[in-house]
Length: 204
Image 1 (cartoon, rainbow, N blue to C red):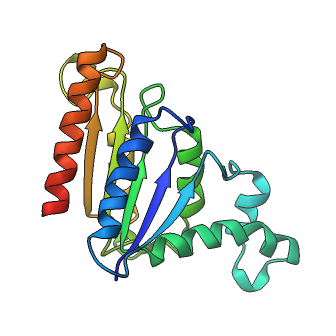
Image 2: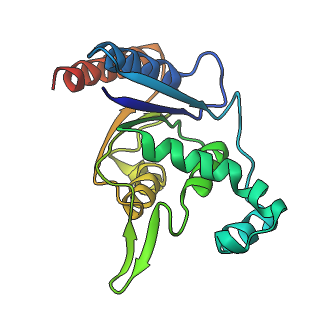
C-alpha cells in the first residue's frame, strides 16, 4: 500500500496544465496497486496562510513552553508536516510564475520546513529528515527554461531542488511542460512529451 500526497498549487481551478497532468499521473499511480491511497492538498481551494511573526515565534518556542495560543498557531503546520511525513510518494503540481513558484506553494513550503521536524542541525551542519520518499514535480511554463538563453532565469526547478534537498529529499523527478505560450503546436508537443514521460514513469 502506497500513500500519495498530491500538492496542487496552480491558481487556476480550470485550464491548468500542471493540475491536469499531475491529476492524470496520480490517477495512474493510485490504480497501479490495490490499496494505494491519495491525499490531496489543493493550495488554491484551501490556501495556507503566509508566515507571520506570531507563527515564527510559536515555531521557535519549545513545545513544552508554548502557550495555548501558540499551540493553536502551530497546529496547521504540524498537520502539514505529519501529512508529508506519512506519504510514500509526493506529487507536486508547480506552475512557473515570474520565474519561480507560486506564493501558495512557497507558503506551504514555509510551513513544512520546520527545524526539529523536517530538518535538524547537528555537529556536521543541517540534516534533512524527509527521507525515503519519491518526489515528482509537474511544471508548466510559458517559455522554455530548461535549456537555451532563458535557463539563467529558471529559479523554479533550482529552488525546489534546493529546498527539498535541504529537507533530505534525494529522489526527485521533474516533468516539464514548456513553451505553452508559443502557440497550439507547442502546447500539443508539450502535452505529448509529458504524457509520454508519465507512461514511462508508470511502466518503471
